[in-house]
Amino acid sequence: MRKNPNIAIVGATGAVGAEFIGCIERRNFPVGTLKALASAHSAGRTIDFRGYKVVIEELTEKSFDGVDIALFSAGGSISKKFAPIAVKAGAIVVDNSSAFRMEKDVPLVIPEINARRIAEHKGIIANPNCAAITALVPLWPIHRKNRIRRLILATYQAASGAGAAAMRELIDATRAHLNGERFEQKVMPHPYAFNLFSHNAEIDPSTGYNGEETKVIKETRKIFEDDAIAIGVTCVRVPVLRAHSEAITFECEKPITEDEVRAILTDAPGVRLVDDRSKNYFPMPLDASCQDDVLVGRIRGDLSDPTGHSIAMFVAADQVLKGAALNAVQIAEYLL
Image (cartoon, rainbow, N blue to C red):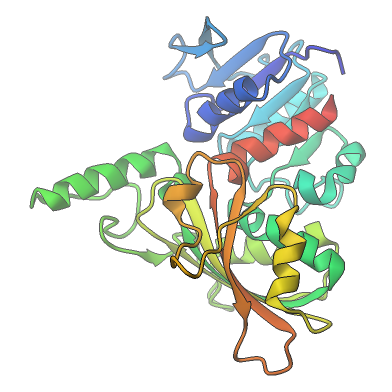
């Protein structure tokens, strides 16, 4: 890897693509040249990068000549087609889609947890699901001290997880609702303003779990390298723009107290405690938005478990940043 690598961003006009660029700028990531790649519809437009105008190019099979690192966030079908092409051209791909996450030879990486796996890549490194990242960053340091054997999650997922179009639809639907106007949603399957609904991923008729929930279960086991963890997940879409929240209850092998959890998380990388009982102030998506850390609070013993092995807590994290772009850029930093 050269000192100032040539970077390509696939999906540069999307919500995550814009954050790729923002993270690279804020973190002073060294860049030789930057390629902004998108559909033919966006080609010719420009984006700002470090005081220069970068012209957006149409993504083609020849887009990756001379590219060292390619950051992908354009959907699974695009990744499946173009990631192998980028690798063949000599690039290392960090892919934000679900296309390669569960492939045996593809590292699935959250740098705070398993950065060592980056060195095992064969051209492609997968960025985990955003709901999984939000939960696992604070759970990992606990798991290392006292193995988590059972995990129950309820997610409250923002519009950004469905892309920029869903974010715009939430804004437009809310405006219409407040003005008493009729609004026909086109991105989401149900009315979004002042509503919430089961995550819009396809449901497996045999299990009743949707695709988002299944991703969280499988990816948690792969990242933690522990297939024995019992996991239950309910994923819900809520009318929030860009930060996911999650209610988490976990059961450990040995008894654990809330004070022990706070002590573990106080200096944990990528975590910030927001846990003020006196003011009833705990993690909120509003506070997590545009922040790099996962906010953690409402840490308390699970009263349904008299054995003292279980803890309940609440977390929030920016889906576009730590849930997507920031995690990918952190992976790219390790490649240097």
